[in-house]
Length: 243
Image (cartoon, rainbow, N blue to C red; front, top):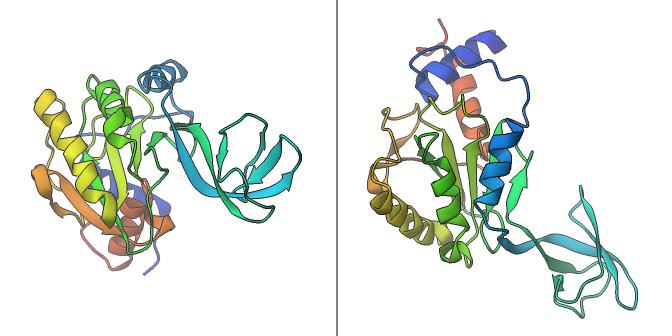
């Protein structure tokens, strides 16, 4: 059947985000600048390693590295490893773990060892975190407990966009899932009212700690990609959102 954008959006908001009403009109995908700055400050300048780079040029005490989209000039000791890497070889670059504008309408935080490892499927946790508790969630995942982990935490980047079951999304590879669950368990114990349960988003199951869980399929399912893909498939099949 023919699938319209309006049908997919309606299904996604109602069956996946589980919004009680209409979605807010958010003019900027980059979010509210003041709120984004506050979330970034909650990371306390946390940095981590990103292994998605390769050296493209190298001089005596400087180098250029690129991940295919971003090119970085590196001229400080310890900014990348291994220090003796040759041009064309993979390197890890130390970058801020807070990431803005990676995904529309999301503030992102990577683990201390970078984003999620996609081989073997990406596990997704959907957190109905409140607006008031979102800064504490970012701070908890930016702490030392996340230094040895690969993951991406995506949080709504506007104060008006927390009335949803997926106000925060965690993407993590299977090998790092236990470590992320440990972080999440400690956060829930410390902030027992931080999550406002809204039910199970479409195509998810109740996971550990009672948090909605799903398994995504590659890069297309990162952040909000999984929800949009499943919504489109449901509408195409003439599911409950297709009417």
